[in-house]
Length: 207
Ligand code: ADP
Image 1 (cartoon, protein in one colour):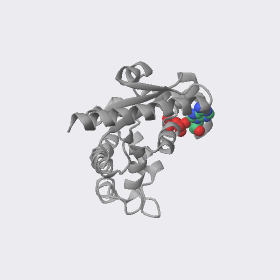
Image 2 (cartoon, protein in one colour):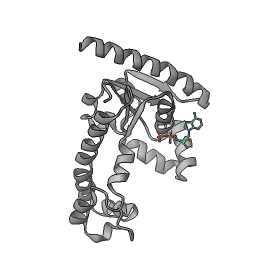
Image 3 (cartoon, protein in one colour):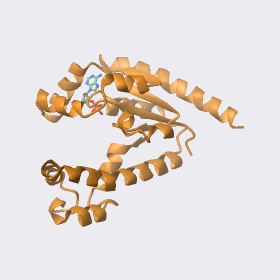
């Protein structure tokens, strides 16, 4: 059972997934709320009965998974659909992520939550918060390349997220991802050693 939880967050395209993978390569556990959301909405996923009951079969893809495009269109046409969707998904994500943090066998767990600063209730579950940070211009560049979106579309997503300043204000630690990958590898190694030391301190204090 992991005794130490490090919440990892950052704006879209800041490099959260990249940095999370580097922590895993060092030996950390990973609980990724985005991945859990995807699992819950696959065919047979735990959220599917409630989602089908709430929105009807028109949000189902042919294989029984959530049809993301249909769901997005519905949320666009009816703003209440988004909060109803979140009302179903978020409690399940909270429950599954808590279970996985608890059952992880690595010394500590990286709990990756894109909207950790915005959602509030994840913060109290974390012993520490690490923010992946880069200039907004780089976020836009990376997401345009990764998702094939226009600069305006990326900016609209960023406008719905916490600001860079708000995230940095919530951070205990910052991984600066404004250069090549080597630069983040070094920072992750330092943080990893630090989290193992903080875990040892926590265990000592609880004896
Ligand atoms: P997030 O999970 O925060 O949205 P990702 O880790 O997916 O961000 O990174 C966004 C994109 O930028 C990905 O395509 C990733 O491969 C790329 N990327 C991230 N960091 C770097 C870096 N330091 N150098 C080059 N490409 C990077």
